[in-house]
Each structure stands twice: as C-alpha cells, then as structure tokens.
Image (cartoon, rainbow, N blue to C red):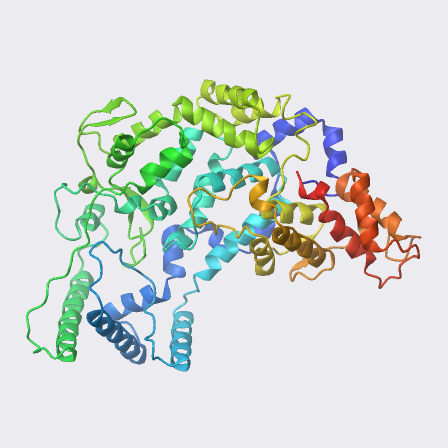
Length: 591
C-alpha cells in the first residue's frame, strides 16, 4: 500500500522504471529500515547461538542437572518433579514406542499447588537471569516485530510481498517444538535471499532448512535397514564431542547420576536397589513420508500434479539422512540446530521418481536430483503460476494468464523475476477487472493501514495481537498449506468487525507503541480549518484512497457519521472515526 506522497513519487519516476527497480531490491537504499531493526539482537544470531542464549527452560534444567552444575535447591526440586512424573508414567499406560522425545519442561502433578508451581518457575527464571540466559519467547516476538517493520517501512515493497508469499507457500508453524528457535534463520537465510531469485535454489534452501526439517519430521527419516552405528556415531563423525579430560569427567558424572537414579526409582517402586535395569523401549526408526508428500503436493507439483503414492515413497527414500545436529540444544554443542547429511541414515539403493531412475550409491545427491526433477516438471510451472496469479490478480485467475506465466517459469528455468515480469506485463494484471479484485489478509491490512496513515510504530506485541485477532497470527498457521489466499476465508461478519475495531484503535491511537497524526492528513492542525464531516470524508478519501471512494460507500459512511454539519472541536473524535470508517470501507479492504 501507498504511504503519503508515494503515488506522486511513482508517477514522477514512471511505472515501468518503478517496477524494474522493485524487481532488483539490492539497488534500493533501505538504511532507514535497517536502523530500526538494530534493536533486535536475535535477528543476526544463528540457530546455535539462539539455542544457547535463549534455551528451553526444561531442557536447560535437565542439561545442567546432568552436568552437576545446578544449584542444590533447584536440583532437588527438579529431581522431585522428575520422580513424580516417572511414578505417574509407571502407574499409567506404557508410552508408545514411536513417540518422539520432548524437550518441554516437566509438567507439575495434578495435585501440585499453583503457588508451588509459580514459585518453581520464578526460581528457574531467576536462575536463568543469573546465568545470562534469556526467555525463548523473545525470539518469535522480535521476528514478528521485524516482519511488521519491514512491511511498513521498507522501500523494497515487492521484496516484502514476495517474502510474505513464499513464507506462506513454504509454511512452518512456530509452535512446533524447536521451530521457534529455527524460524529466524529460516526468514533471514532461506526465504529473503531467494524471494526474487531462482525457485530451484529456494526449494533446496527450504529442504535443508532446520525449520522445515523439524516441522515436517524429515530430520528423523532414516532407512530402517541401514547399518546401526555405535551410540553417538553422528557426533563422532562431526567431531562434536572432543577427547579431552573434561569429556571423560562428564561421562563419569552421568554414569554415577544414572546409577543413583535407578536406585531411587527401584526404592520408590518397592524393588530392591540392586534390581536389574529394565530395558528401555527403543523408538522405532524408519522412513518418514511427511516432507516428501508436502514437497510434491504443496511446494512443487500440486495435488493434481501427476505423482503417485509410490513416488512419495521414493522421494522420502531419496531424502533420508537430511537431518539436524542436536535440534533441541540438549548437548550444548557449538553446531546445534544446523543441517547435516548423515550417510548412516540414508537409503542408498536405486530409486525411481516420476519415471526417472536414481542409481544406487547417490548419497546426498539423491535428494538434489529429486529437487531438479520436481523443479523442471510442467506441473510445478503451472502450480506456481496459478498461485502467483491468484496472489496478484484474482481468486480465480484466467487460464490464459496462468499458461503464459507458467511458460515464463519453464523457459527461465524457474527464475522468479522473469516469471513476475510476465505476470506484471500481462493485460490481465493491468485490467480494470483486476483492480480491487483481491481482499487483503489481516497482515496486509495492518501494514497498508499503517503506511496509509503515515504511522510511527515500534511493531510491538500489541500490534501482533491485533493481527492475530483479525485471524492471521504471524507464523501461527498449523497446517503446512499456509493461510488460504481467497476472499471466502477472510470475509465473515466477525472478521470484518475485528478489522473495523482495529481501524478504530489505530486511528484513535489506542495501540501501544503505535501513533498516527491525523492533522497532517487533513491539511492542518485540528480546528485550523472549517471542517464538517463531509469535508473530512473527502480529505481522508483523497489521502487514503486517491479520491477513489464510491458513491455508495460515501453515502453509507455519512449515514454512520450522522451527517452532522457543525464543525468539530479539537477534542471531537470525528477525524478518527472518519479515518477508521474509510480504512474499513470495501475500497480500502481490497488491494
């Protein structure tokens, strides 16, 4: 959306030159935005650094306890909670053998007093502060703030639109386990650098991203018949553990602690302290098809792309061994949360994907070959073209347009800029029918409203909450499909009411950390002009909609205002009401 003065600036520059400039974002100075982002330290940190600085509290307590580094009082309390959890598990059904391990803090027992729970958490937080750790919630908050600030202040607007598009296309849910630590790198190192580049490069970057590997479980996918190495084989292969005396000391400490714990468990259960240790159930290992299925259905070919269940199985085999080093930061290594290809987990046999053979012994190249096949498949060109045309033109884009955009995608070998040029130069994109054919998502509405009013914002949690209330929590869509991009998903009585409430809160300066100065949009300070409501409507329509407010919308708006002709006083809320109603009008709600 346009900020005050943007439309005039683009007219002076020329539309074609503006589009070419936007297609080459590195040529655009964005220093003002970058200065605003410097207050968010997590944006420049690696996954390893985030896991170390913002650890999961439960994971941290367990790690420090294993190392004997936890204060005695906390260690005792944590031990009691752990013992209570083990007793409950012993009394209940056996856990499933294939249940994934968790790194969440141990939950208190049902009869634990709320005061005890709060006190324990307070002590854990205090201990984290003493050790220089920060709460992990800050990572997602800063990422959400940065995304809003980029949308509102960046001069590279097409870049931000495409980041939003690809973030949704390659959706990752922030609340799935370790992904809250991995999304910062996903945005910075995967989506942004490739948003206007090569689709093939973007596809491989997402396939190797710890965020995607964890979200769709491919980091656990392994050939069930692969030779099992000794425990810790991957760590030794990567040189993570080291060979110094401290390592041997830690091992001795862990053995002693396990010995003591077994004795305590046996005594609690009424068994002799020296009773033989019961064997643990091993988690079943095998090929996980989740990512392979979504790779074809949602990321490339589309649901009608011509693949079979056998193709899914073969793609899953090709991608075994694409995994993550220490994804939960449990080991405290200096490479935690990074991608690695583990040949011990890989199915190295011959495979056939969409009729093309992958010879045995391909290793990591099996996965890369699969990505080549998928990128160059005609169904991928059509699927991506359809989604882009739906995003930029209409919910039901014309077949002729989809065909031309798909052809540009194929001819350019998946060059995103060339594909967009074909779209932007099409008669359909520039047609009268395409104007305001798309309704804005809540994120687009919030960003465009802030821009249109020339707002100043810190993009803090209050703004994130408003976007979530309107139906689009950032990084909060659980399904891998991402948020729908059609009006029927966003248009409802409740949804439209929340949009109007947001507009009123914004125009009335009731969103903490965000402020608008409406006097600057109406030609002077409040009370400085003869401004009845009709004049206010015209002034705001000119500023926010380039004067393009329909007669019907104007009549509805005036009726809601009560058609009072007297000039408002400086304290009168009419200016905020008019601005909010125009932001809530059909003209502003649509692109």
